[in-house]
Length: 208
Image (tube, rainbow, N blue to C red; front, side, top):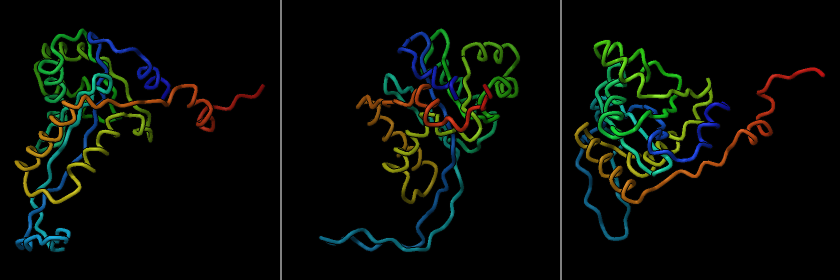
């Protein structure tokens, strides 16, 4: 925990950008009946019945200090997809960075082992050394700032029926552009000092 909190206290450094990464999934559902037309003064009405239309994997990358985020929609949440997202992060979004400081949850899809499963050894080695990995502790995924952004994405974009993956990509892209243009940052205030006071029960107890 303190390792992640220390990372969050570092000043912004374009050569070593801080990026938080998380993943989830979204079920796509289609309407089975055409919605009734809206009338003045009434809220939209939706039939309870729907048709399941597959599940997409969502990867979210957030650079909280410059206020940048990017969402990737994939068919699966395997090591291959995690490695591809990290490669894009390094070579497309932060190609000039000396090393990307990555905060991630304890997942086997985001890390060196994924690179070696997805790419040739030389490429896997290169990508491994583009990142400085920091894991949130077990049951401590709330320390990942990407979870804050997931909450915003859910409330502003995903908390409704989305028919298919193409629509999901369009909606997330539009949301991403709007948030990035607004340069929306994260004001993280929980520090190591706070953790030692408020979460004292989680620390080992030593007898004097």
